[in-house]
Amino acid sequence: MKREQHDPQADSLPIKLASPARRALVNAGYIHLEQLAEASAADLKQLHGMGPKALDQLRHALAAKGLSFADERT
Image (cartoon, helix red, strand yellow):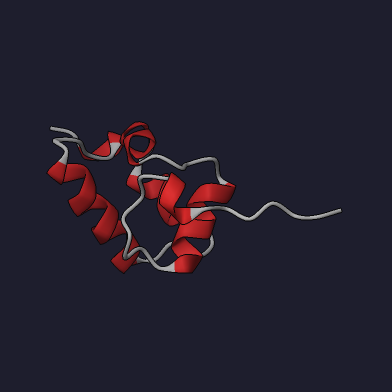
């Protein structure tokens, strides 16, 4: 059985996001940046492969679209 390859160009996650963080998000069902606005940074931090640098990159990418993590809204 052939395993499907994920096409990083098909998602809207930041291009420079490290592969372990990207895999962690995709495996958790997050393939579009906008989906992360419904998640909390605390929950994403628990994903294996998701470190502080990746969270910061995602935070900046969300902010560029006027979005933020669910637990960081004011």
